[in-house]
Length: 282
Image (cartoon, rainbow, N blue to C red; front, side):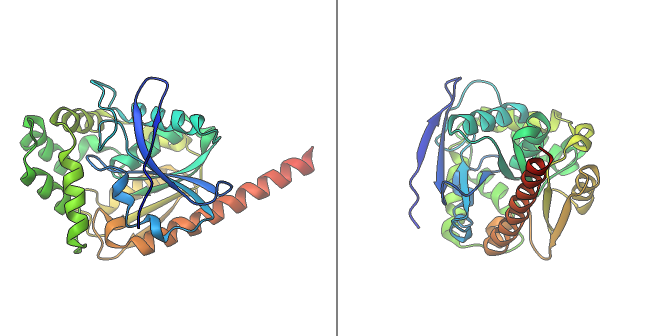
């Protein structure tokens, strides 16, 4: 499938590539990739989303072909970019669906911009990355000492570690190549910011409908990570993908698309009911 890649320059000068599909009147869904990925991380997922969803897959700052500012790689910075992106397109609110780092950004977005969060879909997420032994080891042994050019072996090992099932080789090659576009300083800055961030205490304030997807062979985040997020966000729902790894949207794109679509339908129906009640009250 061919995708038309567009670019949008935010008020601060950061330019983000993105692809868009679906009806303009559809429920807006913003797809946020994991660290060192790009919009292409959703290339296998997008064809399975219906036109009733106005889907945007964004390349976040520092990644892919996006601008690479010297600073601004904390979850709050990425979340602000999403808010400015929506404002530029005159979209008041959206379902924010994020994978891994993108899920942490999605959490931050819901905390900072509750009025713009129609719903959350969190794939391969975490309650607090600071105490994650695997990530801390990866930081200390690999990322903290990275220099340009980032070795292909590092990108390959990192991307394959997210998988529990085989995916088409051509897509794995794409994901590795996208990782190699990311400068070493961005690897370091984004990883360090995730490990330093702790907004877990604010998750209890999130009121948006939330769907959490977890692969039970996730090598990064265990069931407890996801269960703590589910416990913190009232009314959230968690689905387990048996046999799937951290990147379940690569391993099972059809199922992930189906779950996102069903969730979006529930969110749209809830919004219609709330609007109807408000009209009746007035």
